[in-house]
Image (cartoon, rainbow, N blue to C red; front, side, top):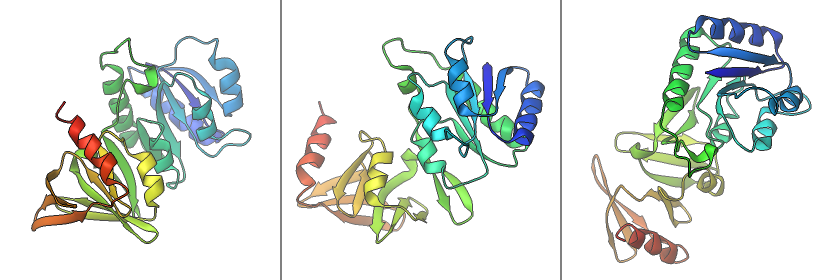
Amino acid sequence: MNCIIIDDDPLSRKVLEQYIDRTEYLTLIHSFSDAVEAINKFKNEEEIHLIFLDIEMPEMSGIDFLNSLKAQPLVIIVSSKEKYALEAFSYNVTDYILKPAYYARFYRAVERAKSQFQQPVHTDQPKNEERERDEIFIKNKAALIRLKYDDILWIEALENYVVFHTFDKKYTINFTMKSMVSKLPSHRFIRAHRSYIINRDKFEMIEDNSIIVKTKTGSKIIPIGKHYKEDLMNKIVQLGK
């Protein structure tokens, strides 16, 4: 896999260069100190399969760089800050490594990239839509947690927080419901109420103006808001077509 590094921190670049050199299936094409230089050379270089990208950089941030790409290769974020993780994963990045990056963590990330790279390509799909994510990363206290979409039963608004409910646990993060809607795939999650988003594969029935979801301790009754009912029912009906 041909890869490049974009990071304004020389020590971080050196570490990543050494890790890439130790990994048999990776070939380093370039190591850039800023995103502007990378964009200027990106068009004419041989095909790039994987980018190791920092977020906080002068002139152009890592997020700005991702926005500039028409066709996005696989991307692994390597950042000193956790706060960009949720936004970064909305760009379908492969993984998010916190600095300092240790080789064991680096290797897990590139193995994940290798697995995605080896997936069959469908020529009728845009490159950045070939690999649909099946998970979201959430910051819970001091931890960054990988949460599979299939494990989420529903998401509930709680003032300036949202709560992810799974069969066994719940996770509370500082995030708004409106922003959460934009981060989740609309074909997997449906807004049922101003305070609730449901996983449409996880509820048992709709009864009157309520949705019944099975939980570990019984059932959860989720109200359906009148402003959301029509859209919800249209999406549910589509499952049977």
